[in-house]
Length: 323
Image (cartoon, rainbow, N blue to C red; front, side, top):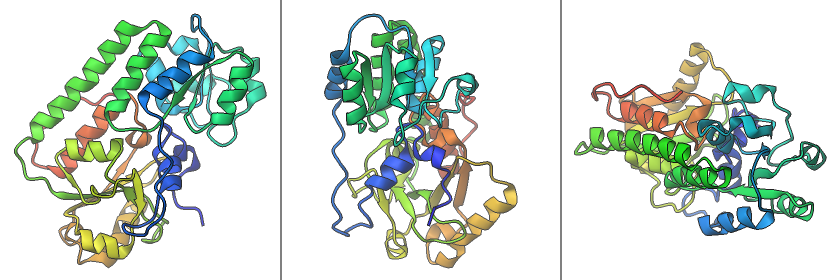
């Protein structure tokens, strides 16, 4: 059965839901194999540099997070095609669509005559086919929060927009550091971060594990990830595991579709069955809405600020979010 996740966010960003839920090894202690190892930064740099050299003037991006980065560093006019699920910034809506993680359209990509194609690191076959026709690739892999700024720096290098990239990473780092300072010294509530489940039920609950940018955001915003000891980016959390973890705050992410307030209230009420969980008992279940919440791109500082305000509701207002 499909969960309530909209498919387009399953791919957003090299995104959390497709790659996390697909790589999920089940509940803690389930003995399910670990997800496939992600390439290290040096490996992806090597792949990007090894396909074809020369100036990058025409770019096709299949990764929404990287598409956002390209526009944010001023390379947006060079983007000539995007993935089927790219929606931000608004300029991408008018660009040709070339498929995505599971259905890239190689023929259409080639007809756009790109100098470089941004793809998911798992798209090995596509990368090889592009290499054979002399098209450079820029593989992107999920990683921790530091991978966001590292990827922006890499894009700055390959596009010749180093200064713009550095200005952007400095701005992101400054806002993240501001969040870190705001929550410093405060108690860290035990936090469960959920990014998927079946609508109206607590079946097939997928949550953040102890690695990855969502885990890093929870910790930076002053929370203590209840599944920090599970060294995966995601896990399928059983009711028993959630009860045992006893989160004091529960953050559930909604994205991909607009949700009316009544629907949000109904989904929040789904958690009432777990009244023994402190977050439920004390009415600290929060449903946050927005595609940017699961995209590891230039707006991660905005997500950190939202998490901090939920985890520490008495915090004074923070800076304006990156939109």
